[in-house]
Image 1: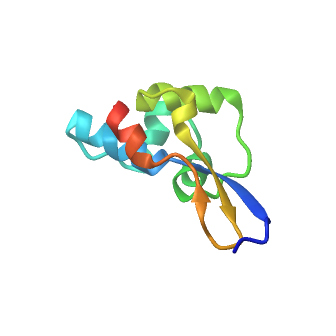
Image 2: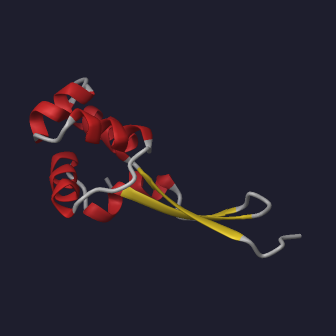
Length: 99
């Protein structure tokens, strides 16, 4: 039984979306490629890829969403976990079906 405590998290879908872009373009895309093709820093791209991003700005979100060919809201997943570890969040499959 849940004690009512909830923890909300926001994670990026960068790796997942980059894999979709690789499939769509039939090429391997490294983080260095992303840095070179977007102008964003390696530090920022590593943060997106490793879910260690603590803050970003709207311009970076716009650049990445354009680069990946997705809506800015697709870059993130919001989830709520209760004390028993149950998550209430949209599934990644919903995103994959939309691409």
